[in-house]
Length: 279
Image (tube, rainbow, N blue to C red):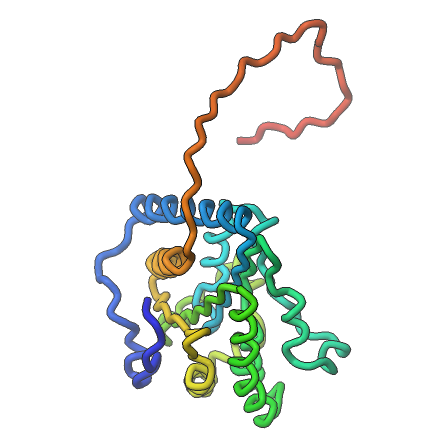
């Protein structure tokens, strides 16, 4: 994990992947490390509630890079009332007629909220540009506008974190083939995924231009290699935790009281349907 420094010095580096530790990360160690980080996320949740902090986290990256899995691990132990995931569908005709950033602004965090964008306004700099869903002029206007909008976000008190998940070409191939042949994963495979797979270098150029225009002091990009899903998740969550100036809550000293006695209560005979015990 590191701040963007020429994420693609050359595409040979992309295809070989970054220098990940060669030793396999075992499940026990992974789950132990994840449990510690998820406890930190709970502490962040309580700090956000108490202080009214506003946090916005953006996840972008190539298809199959692991955005959904990382987000799942971030939110699985916290309250959905505080941590909210935004994954917007294709814009409606009305939304297409709006100022581009407008549909995203309504989802920005209020006090006491953490909003996670599973893809974001950066669609315009990535998939829309590569697939021809917007004009070159619209992309250029977006790249000029995005840093200004993000500066206003940060100026309003929002903590903004932007993550790009990078996967090598060989690993992307393996993951897409897995989706094709595994009926549990076919829902993840779209025609857009297949088309974008063929346009690897178009996406590389689009990503590079996006970094060049929008990697700012107030909204820097952070890049994580996710060829190893487990390592990638741990690295991202660990970095995320390090970027939030939270304070850990005082440990609770709670003792469960004695349960009341049944008194005159007796369980009635009801006609409710019980699920059969199959396992």
